[in-house]
Every structure is written in structure tokens, then in C-alpha cells.
Image 1 (cartoon, helix red, strand yellow):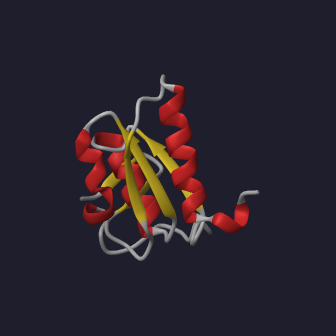
Image 2: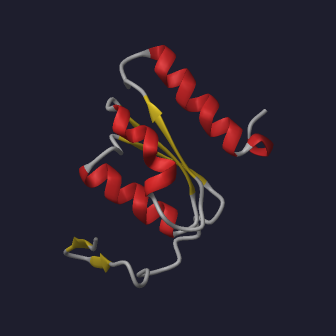
Length: 101
């Protein structure tokens, strides 16, 4: 599915530019659908390790439905809940243990 904006177009065949995100950890909140899902897709296409959060249980399938060379993990989380935030941070830490103390 193409992602279009007035200043760029990224489609399934190519990327507009190398964003330098390979093996970086990115967090996308609200990633179960819409713009959040599209952002997560672009990041995985760029080689990022992506933690996708959302309140819907459909976000849990992110690691299966997002394509690309990178790893994607879905976490059901409510941004207003401190315990959810801790779960999201711990998930990101597992993706890059060498970057966190």
C-alpha cells in the first residue's frame, strides 16, 4: 500500500531515501491501523526494529504482518497507564540490550 504525502511518495517497490534507521529501535504508538500502521511499515522497510503499541489486541500481530528485514513487536498498551509504559520500555530494551544500562 503506497504512503503518499505532498513532499514524498514511498511505495512497495522502493524507498525514497536511506533514512539510516537500520537496526535502530523505533517506537510507534497507535500503530494498529491508519497512519501509525503506515509509519511502522515504513520504519520496518528501512530496517528498523519497531515496537508498535496500540490499545487494540490487533497490534499484537505486528511481528507477523509488517514486512521487511527488521523485527517488529506489537505491544497492547494504554499510553495513559504507567504500567503499560514500563512494559513498552522493557520491550524496547529486549530489542537492543547493548544500548540500555
